[in-house]
Image 1 (tube, rainbow, N blue to C red):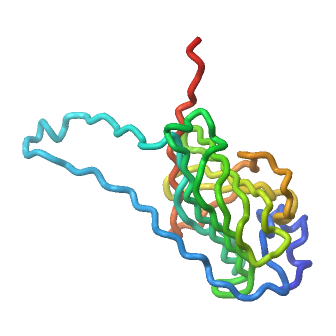
Image 2 (cartoon, one colour; image 1 turned 135 degrees about the vertical axis):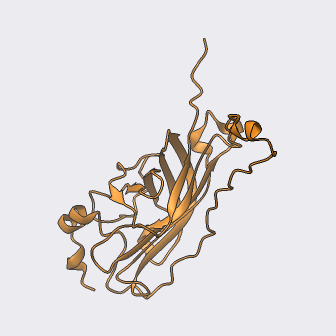
Image 3 (cartoon, rainbow, N blue to C red; image 1 turned 180 degrees about the vertical axis):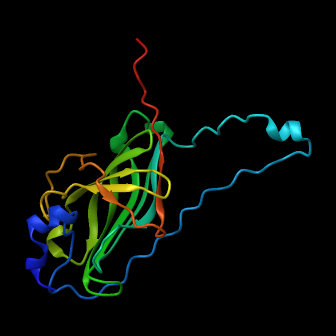
Length: 210
């Protein structure tokens, strides 16, 4: 596939070219564990007990971004993002202590040639159902990207999620190490229906009390 097919102008118009390269070998999409959402258990036999409102369980962590989905495309491109990012309760005041992993894969067609990258999360901020996170690329088939920081944003809207990334206006990740933590573009991309979704755990901002 020609590099010219993924110029900056086209990339911005359709949501950035990501990682397609002419010489990239065919790669398999990195598999990630499916994200499950435990269902509510309805206990008791009395109708009154079932109808009684229940308090929502307190999150076991300060913030989180998890899930896996493909981006919507009208072309044959196959683009997948996977997140497993968490901020522990003990670090509620330090989003830059978030941990976890991310993966993104861009193929010219399912099972075709393309590029991929995996990395470790180094910052996570969520507000309501919107998350912004960054991480360092630790593994990739594009040498210049290793060690660089990239950013992502997600709007959790059930099965109609949106996603953004730090290279939205530049045509693809450029290997920069200067991107600041928790920095990304707005979630402008659409998630392809039926391919998965993302889940955001809201961060309760620790506002000063005095």
